[in-house]
Image (cartoon, rainbow, N blue to C red; front, side, top):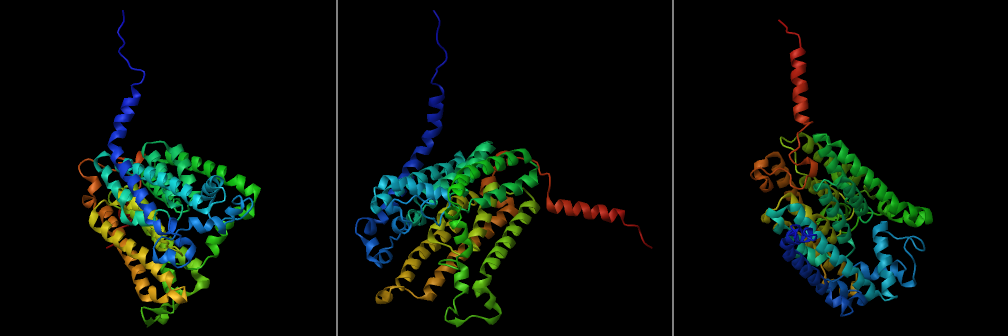
Length: 458
């Protein structure tokens, strides 16, 4: 008689044991998703979407509901194929999926989309917790039930890109570069901003010379991006390129600092003459690209010259924040892009709370500002000065948060993540990697070598 000493189902209890600590976070993320849905109650159940100014006075506006008609989905049009869509193909795919279930009903289309975005929020929170590691998984609460997240969750389809991007970075952290590339590419095919994370990965690759995983990741990303984009390009290139053409041609829009610069009056004062170029609409694309390039160059120098290699999440946060600050438009839902990376970069509540207060302030300000677009209701809204005050509050609190992350990079003893022997828990192959190139050290070494070669003079 033999005794069985192994259990065929042994892996399941191990997986379950690892999953149990994340269950409360998943439930709280589900609560956040429900609260975000209830916030839209006056629009979803009270009909405020159909009453013009009501969606602003009740602070329940969403792009999802009106785009059901604007993008001709109510007529059964297939995105890109039958009608050009101003979003990348990932969002077009979500639109088509929800359209098929909606049966021509815009409210059902919204509900289906919300279910998908709610799932994306829960997944994104769990991924954030996994990236934070067991010791700091509760930092993901900022993403699960943060006030700005609840207010902005269902304005657009941003949560889907967030889940894909976080999944890609977790795959990288778990040393699965092919999967990381695929998921990051799908994120870029849903919203453009995850492209910034490729730059962060590249900079740390240059510093550590971990080229093989990086190249695998890039190859996986290129293959995945082509796989989802090329078929649409072949079927209807004009419909596919609408997003890229729209992004290039659009002017300064709500929330962006460029929109402020283009106003003729700045807080009741004439715009200074020597700053007039900031309001030049014809040079907007050039200025926005140049400003982003300058900030990203600063991030690159920081990454390569810092005394200790920065953590991946610190660079992801700085690159993404630079992209948002210099963008031509800064919609309220863009806060969803940044929350998980702000938490992973610097999980200290003070600066995070101040930034979140500013984001909530802007959320209410933009809708009150848009009320003034209705002359009969102008008295219910706010004017330029209060609105732009909220714009600058959001920008300045984010800049302060960026400055604190830069300080943590330059003085790693201030980085709460790097206590003890911890290096970069979400860095994957970068974790405890040896520095192969440090910009400052290279310059100093080169300078010292040159000094030794200098002939002595009398």
